[in-house]
Length: 66
Image (cartoon, rainbow, N blue to C red):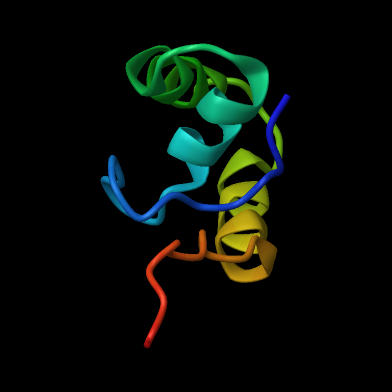
């Protein structure tokens, strides 16, 4: 499993679903469908998404400034 960080590519809004998809080895589309389906259930899913968007670090680039 990879570290949990919001990727620079494959983002739609904040990159949270793309980060979770990479972490758990599934596609970003599948994770987005799961998230949207979970929003139909009662609970703080949207607040959790916002918290992850704020607290997950963005993926670092491998390019050097030399």
